[in-house]
Structure formats: structure tokens, C-alpha cells
Image 1 (cartoon, rainbow, N blue to C red):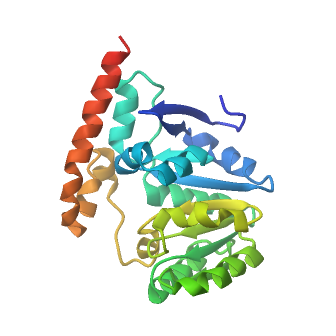
Image 2 (image 1 turned 180 degrees about the vertical axis):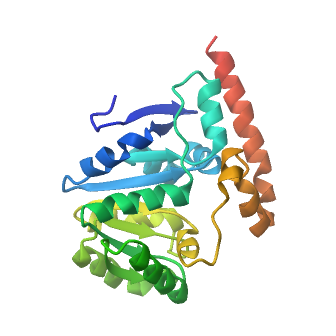
Length: 248
């Protein structure tokens, strides 16, 4: 049992998953205000399988302070393996809940990712939605490599409570652990399409689609070439079956 309030960790195929009751999320976020760095990872099945085989990604997930399951298949796998069942969070709803918690305590956020137009529009909408949240900076994700030290320094000086990183940053979600030593404290979270959703240029899945575990369909329709991932998902189910059989 982790010492942080409301947090219990299980493992699925050797990858950590946190059990986070929704009613304890406020206390959990408050416990991160301890003067050190905390990374939150939104974990899909695809991410879980990558965390088994890619060293850098595996290290990132293992070292995260919070690993939040966002795929219905992960929850079903936990149930099938007789683990305590983790609540599943939809990425947009989780981030909205996180921003609301930070707003209530007068905390701050910095936005990194997307195009200049998208991140600017996302910032404007967030200022309207969360007037009590201090947005202390923004920067588009597509930037020349030589600019990265200046961007990292700007974030360090801004000292946001939350650094929210989206698609477009070099290295994707790995941008955070690669640059984490440069920052003194805070909460760090990567979510690929979040700024497009905040900019109202991409819709989040409807609650009914999420409830039935079908929220992968809109993402697939936007990126049909990801069909090559289907064998990976099939392998996930096979490995879960073998793990269940090994419990006997």
C-alpha cells in the first residue's frame, strides 16, 4: 500500500497500474505539493505493451508517481486476473478534474505542445473555464531543437504547479522524463490531443461510447493506419490469458 492517500498499486503483465478512487483524487493531488517532481501517466493498452519491451518507456512508467488506466481492456484484464479493479478515467475528464482541483487552491499551469494557433486558442478557453487557475506560460510543441534549453529555462522560471504537455513536443511523452531533472518541483502530465480538445477543434468521446469501451473508434477513424496495432492488442489478450492460467 502506498503512503499517499487513496493510492494502491497493482501490476498487469509486470506494468504498474494505480487504483485511484475518484473521491480521493483531491487528497492525492494535494499530497503532490511536497516540493519534488511528480509525473502522471495516462496508460492505454498500447502504452502498457510498450512498457513491457521498450527500456526508456518502461523506466518512465515504473518511475511515475501515478499510472492512470484509460483503456477499458486494462480494467477488464485486472478483473480477469482477480486483482482489485482500478477505476478507469477518460483522459479529458481526468485532466479537467485535475485542473479544477488546482484552480480551487489557486495553483498554476504551463501549456507545452500543439501548434502556435492551437495552444493559444486552448489557453484562451482554459482562462475562461478556469478563471482561478494561473496560466503562467505557453509554447507550441513544434520548435527547433536548439530552442529547447531556452524553453526548459522559461518553464523552470515560471515554476508551474502543473506542466501539461501535448503532441508536437520532441520525443512525445518521453519529453517529460528527459527534461524532468531541470525542474525543481511540480506535476507533469502528457496527453497527445488535449490541446485540440481544449481549442474545441476535436471532440472528446461521448459518455456512452466511453461507458461501452468503444472510445478507441473515433481515434481509429482519425488515424486508420494504426490498424497495424491490432496484433499487439491480440497479443495482450493472449498474455493475459496465460497469466490467468499461471495463477492456478
